Amino acid sequence: MPSKIINAPPKQLMQINIKNFPIVRFYSIVWNALFHGQKLFFQRLAGTLLMIFLINLIFGCSKKRGIANQPSQQFFQDVTTKYLPTSKFPLQGVTFARVDRNRGSDLVWFVPTPSKGTKIKVLINKGSSGIGREKGDSKVKQIPGNIRSLAKGDIDRDGVDDLVLITAHQKTESAKILFNNGKGYFYSRFELKLPSIRKGIKNIDLFDLDLDGDVDFLFTGRKLLEENGKINRRQGQVFINIGGGQFKDETNLLWPELPSGIMSTSIADYNQDGYLDVFLVYGNSQNRLLINNGVGKFFDKTDLLLPKIIDKSTHADWADFDLDGDNDLLVTNKAIAKRYLSYSDETCYFLENDGSGRFVKKSNKILPGVPAYRVYVLDANGTGIPDIIILTENGVRYLVGEEKWGYSMETKKRFPKTSHVREMTFGDINGDGFLDILGLVGKNNNPKLWLNRVK
Ligand SMILES: [Ca+2]
Ligand SMILES: [Ca+2]
Ligand SMILES: [Ca+2]
Ligand SMILES: [Ca+2]
Image (cartoon, rainbow, N blue to C red):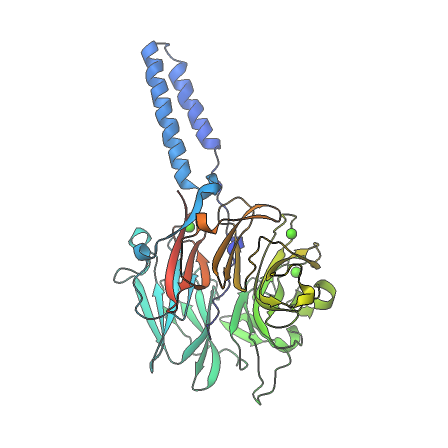
């Protein structure tokens, strides 16, 4: 079973807009200096030539500086061989993380090693000499057992990412924190033991669910079991951060009773009260929406807020697709039950938010009409309109946002040909403010790195 990579929140990345203002001012200063002095012909000629040179120089530089300056020229380039070391073994999972305090996202990946547990490799971004390529730029941590899931987040608030793992060792599953010393060395603190987790937990989300400034943990999985083997009534577990690296299991207080079948989560503020809510993706039934009451207690408001749709959902992601200020959703499916189809080969649909967290289905035939299993929304080209990447059975689909609900399918123009991509994680490897992509590709789950750039 592939483990889930933590959903990086791509939408939260700040856009960088190159301001033309200083350039215009510089231009006028040079112009004044040249032409308000002695009015000699050769001076003017030299001045004009200098001006042309400067304009070219400035324009040339600004072109290179920002994707947002030329969004139509944006594309993803395969830079795997330039930036990454060759990986001999199939990767089980990978995430971008802030491993040290230097510019550019670092990577953490893990590989199962027969009889010796799992090898976690930390790859430090060293700019033009690559990510973990040179000797000394990578660190290895060996842990016993298998890793079911790995997520990153700054748990002790020291400005670098720590790791949370779900591991299975000798038939017991447990959650572990590996703290980061700030330089990419990860260690466990034995005095800080996390509460026990339910059997069947596969996903970890790290977010501040009670809005007190520190990250808390939400665990979910397709089928959570009690110790006696019975189906757990809540199908989730909530650990609240109580400071000092300690966590308290507050599931009974904060998490509602739910049916089993949860595939993944999409976490955002859906009813615009400032608190993060949870959209639950179900693999073979109605998806569900839990609203946060403001202190981290979640209420199942599915019947009130979601349209009834029975489908085999695989994944969901959110963005303000219609640019009206509230967060909408995009849901991918293997299939949708016939009576809920808006057109015959529909597999993906939007859910449009009315602003209060109440959603209506919004179909769009530009979305792929084949079984799809991942969706990632990001502003890849800096226009302020969300762009969409969907992984389908027939390959990657890249849709560029043009206006509200208006998309253009631009996979060929902007995304290199690649074999089957299992999943993606997002980070900014060159620190330009635009997200780059790492994908696990092919039968062997090889890492592929795609740099976001302009021609
Ligand atoms: Ca918190
Ligand atoms: Ca909310
Ligand atoms: Ca909206
Ligand atoms: Ca970048």
